[in-house]
Structures are given as structure tokens and as C-alpha cells.
Length: 270
Image (cartoon, helix red, strand yellow):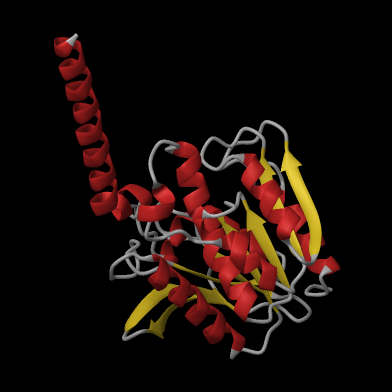
């Protein structure tokens, strides 16, 4: 009996050591685990955007680098907040489609992503997105904000503190910490996660019309995140759920046509 008790205590101690080690590893390496900031930078000269220009936007003593093209009369400027992986320039097909139909755009890498030097943090990403909005607002065009995946966090944050015409959230999380908690239910992520991106709190201050797009087969951010975030929006416009679509499938599923209709309803495009 005594041996059994000692064995049980030893087993519990071992489990606690392993658990504590896992939590410690997650805490000290969390940003390396959370962000995928590597990828090819596509030069502007190599894509089909002959009228776009490179821009360097100052923020906090640093700069964020991106591309910009003004809209045609009667069209808005899309501020595009990229997702978690690679460079913004990798999605040049999207920007090419925007400008082919008269829309302007501003797209950029947050600090720490391929085109913008620096270190990655939630505070930095939010500051970068806000600086991008303020830079674009000086151009005096109607502005709509489009966030994708990780970018739905800064997009929601900026919409909560600035006055855009519309907010489009593509495959959003309820919050980044909610996704982490769903993925690692036995870990105390709410206590140790530094970059939580609380879109579920910021959305309460978003007065702009909101569209949420998500796919039922998204294994990166479960579709329930988008549904729950949309339910919190003070000014909901449309919840577009695509059966069978994964995390990166919505462009091919026709989100651009849905976006144009949404921007028109919001009064940002004629």
C-alpha cells in the first residue's frame, strides 16, 4: 500500500513537472509559435499594378512598408490588413482585382513581417494598422477596412477607434486567445498569452456596417468564431458562411463580388 501511494505521488509529480514545462515553453516561445512571419517579398515591378507605388509609413520611430494606389472617382480606398503568414505582397492578385474595378488600396506588412523590419507584438500590429489608416485618411477618400485572419484583429481595433465606411472580416477569430484555448484546452492560455487580440471586446465600439465571411471547413479558425463575432456587432450587415470552404478558400469562392456589394450597401462605392 505504501509503495502504491509513493508511486501515485511520483506520477502526479511527474505530470506536474511535464505540465509546468509545457506552460513555460509556451510562455517563453509564444510569439514564435503564434506568428508565421516568413515569406517571399514580391517587388512591385514584378506584378500587374503599374500605377501603384511603394510607401513607407512612419510609426513609433520605425516604418511599415507597403503598396498604395488611389481609387477612381466614386470608389473607396480599401485598407487591407493581411493575415498571419508571408508578406502582404504575396496577395498581389487581390490588389490587381481591386484596381481593375476602380477601387484603391493600401496594403502593408506589420513590423516583423517580411517587408517591414522590427519585432512582432500585438501592440505593434495595432499601432501599425492605426498608422496606416491615419496615413490613408489624409488622402480624403472614403475608406473601407478589410481584415483577413490575423488581420481581422487590427481591422476591428482600428474600426473601433476610427470612422471608416465599412468593416469586412474574412475568417475572423472571436479573439486570438479564444482560438488558442480551443486548440490547447488544457493549457491556461488566458493567463499566459501576451497577444490576445480581443476582437470580442473591440467590436462593441464598431459603428461601421460589418460583414463577416467564413467557411465551414476552416480548420485554422473554426467557423463558430466568425458567427459569434458577428453576433456581437452593433451594426451587422451580412454573415456569409460558405459550406465546405477552408481558411484560404474564400477568394476563389467569390468573396470579392460579395465585398463589392457590401461596400455599395455601406455607401462607400457608387
